[in-house]
Image (cartoon, rainbow, N blue to C red; front, side):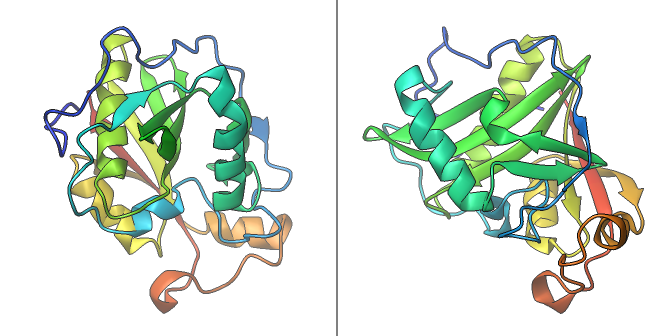
Amino acid sequence: MMAAVDDPGMRRPVEEGLRDPRPVSAPRPVSDPRPVSDPQAVADPPAVREPSGGELPGDLELRPPTGDELPELHRLLTEAWGSPVVAAHGATYDLTTLPAVVAVHSGRICGAVTYRIDGAACELVSINAFDGRRGVGTALVEYAAAEAARWGCTRLWCTTTNDNLDALRFYQRRGFRLVGLRPGAVDEARRAVKPQIPAVGAYGIPLRDELDVERPL
């Protein structure tokens, strides 16, 4: 899945890549799949609702977070999602417990991706470009793809919803293809788990279904 990153000169330390997270504990069954403060939150993050643009800072650094950076990373993820917990494909995930890669510029975290590896598949659980429209989301996807391939993964995938047209555009322009559809998955979560999930999502589109996108590595 490796394609050119927005800035070919971006620093990516060879010695620091994705941490090999295997074995990964199985996702918890859904008990509350949407954060109370953000009932629309799903497995694709707000960052991909914005088209990538602009130029990456020349000193952008992509790497796993240091121990000192974890509290700030967890704060940013919780703020972006309204809760550290997100949901997709019938499971919930606590983002603060997952392996992560951060984009750091001038000592500040400007983006992050969390992921899980299951066999030969690497799932992107969340992607956030906290500054937006600077190519950080693309850089994180490409970094994760290259490092997952190093660990022997053969595919990179994630879940989005039928209303998230910006996410669908983002992923397809970066080599992903639609590989799965769960009609009514959001409707079921709304009915069985959380009635406050809105019936209408982005662009006034009824929020009903989950879609999986995948890119070979």
